[in-house]
Length: 380
Image (cartoon, rainbow, N blue to C red; front, side, top):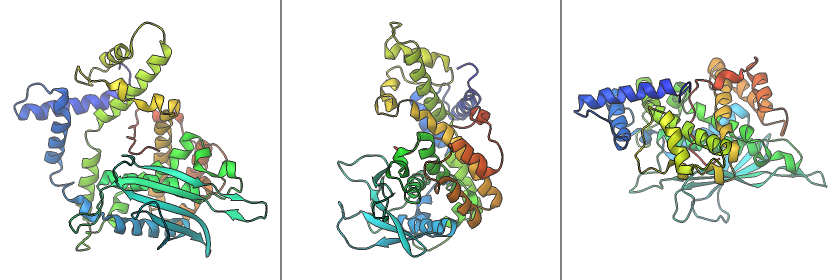
């Protein structure tokens, strides 16, 4: 689309892919070739960077280190409670405490099952409140995901994208559990604006893209071998390379949404609107038989315009994480400051004001222009 900030990114990726295709005797890249060629290009640019990388992120070991990280950064203790009845044998219960006092719980339902949702998400069972007797009713969050269970003697191991999912949802759960609001109607993440609710999840994803943090987190599930800095750099670069098409598809969905609302009643069908929008995005190829608009389900799944909060909350999360990068990604004082700024006040000041207070400077709304759009990897 003329003037669209995504065009230079996508155009560069398209030219790069076309040049790569010509090296392999393909004069014209068809829409159905793009994903395959992009993967082949990544393999050439970053050979072996992602091969068997998940062996360094076994689920149990990763979860254990995540809990240790939260202890250091937020001053809490997370202990798994053994025993008790759950809705499935794979479900685990994490108890969160502070100063020897239990402050909340997280149910962890990590693995894929038939007849269950095929995406990750966070839900809540109870908000924090102070009852009439002055006693707290403790918050309870549920982290559901669809990781592959252990097979053939190998534990569940996470790809980098799955690592981001785990951290994203864990951020949501901590925001729900660590609130200090005494009011039931204000203390849950479901009561927050969508940009504020998504911020903590997207902030936690930033650690998964931090070289220093991934170096600390990864350990081979059999040997305990640590990843090298060169391997981590290559893996992070490979995972983020050639992302212009995905960003363009997200943008295309948004433009179709706006166009449908702005021109409602002009006689065009949904498919015709979609075709008109695609013609304006010259570098984005889709097969003639595609039904892209039919898959943009945000418009009919209660997200409505709140889906665009993902972009703004993602930008703010990147801005907030700059302080962690500056202070050190394991800086406990910065972690406490983050908790006090974003979790402690409950439904306090607007998100933008909170981010500005945390980073110590104004944040320009123009940051959205020309910035990468984070791909949504979960349902929440």
